[in-house]
Image (tube, rainbow, N blue to C red; front, side, top):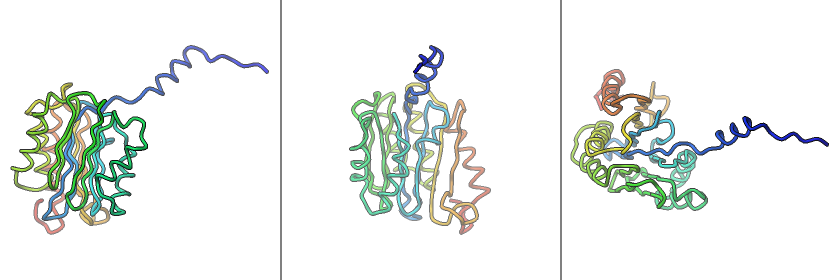
Length: 239
């Protein structure tokens, strides 16, 4: 039987294809509005289309942000566990304990009751870390320093308005404090509430993304204002 040795070009293609994806150096917030029950995720990164891989949320269940060497399977798996009544801390343990790359992952999980928990692997690129409080968690990696997280937390707690507006303001504060060491590229906002999606047929109330822009948070805020005007809350009041 004859066997052919793969050509060098094919070998190079296989190696390139098998290479890990770029790290999601980013800062994000998962949050809840206790008065409306809205749950959401807002994120900014020096990575194209960050909202496609970081943000997960389900009405009356919870919100999840998976980043650093992000594992997108954490999103749907984590939401299923939250829906079963498992608390965020235990969900994180269940997800990361079976993941050989957990030391490179960063994960934030917020439950429907506002309880939040974080995981920042000890191999995440510095600066990496986060903060939890009732109804929100902020986290990031490849940041200029802890001041980014502290600024995000302060802004969310002090800002009034809708959940979307408070999360966007938190992103602004994080960027103004230094943000991602590498710069800016994309941002995203996801807010869910049961029956508040398009036509009342789903829970995706706000699902907005800026995939490539020199000032992604400002652009996200501009798009949000247009979306808010076009799609006010079902009770006809602007959120």
